[in-house]
Image 1 (cartoon, rainbow, N blue to C red):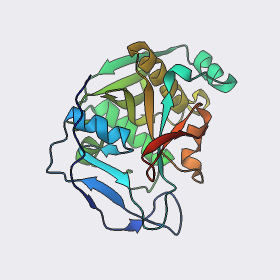
Image 2 (tube, rainbow, N blue to C red):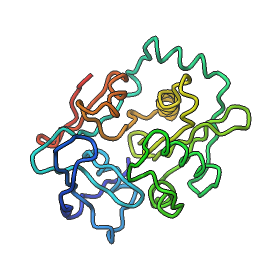
Image 3 (cartoon, rainbow, N blue to C red):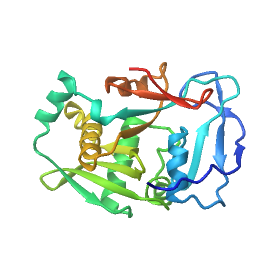
Image 4 (cartoon, rainbow, N blue to C red):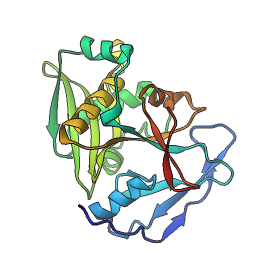
Length: 238
């Protein structure tokens, strides 16, 4: 069993406008960027509802709101619904390739296309390749990329971390023109199956907000557990 490290001292970020819920303020608990986060410590952070953005590790700690909750799928208990089964069938021509985390012009071009159409004007809709690398390529833990291709054409990329008891889905971007294929759903289904093959327990999906339409898709994966920061435990929500 991997030996876990205790969570180091944390500090709170300044408050800012919430990017998900209007008229609300947001803030995060942050691990000091100068502190070396090792894989055992990352395991403990993930189990405690934290996520990472590049080499920045954080958990929401908002002044008057607890709507943002980290969620995970117990993969051994997951059964796809009819819609998800159809998604797998209509994408039987998609090939999955594994890559180490490194910069690729092909990946960055697809990322820019995805952000320009799906998140135009958002903070991540940025043409600076250095910021892209800081966000998705730079990692000091066990990270890998999953490419989704139709023949030779790249249609999606997932950034995924290994943790002690599962996989953590850091971020997925895909060709927004291929809307009928539901590539975001397909990526999660592929990661669930991969976690099962490795004999992991969970797929961590990041944060979920019940009243945010952009995050509502996570409710389609059942069973689903959320981390309750008040009691420090994972609880069933779907």
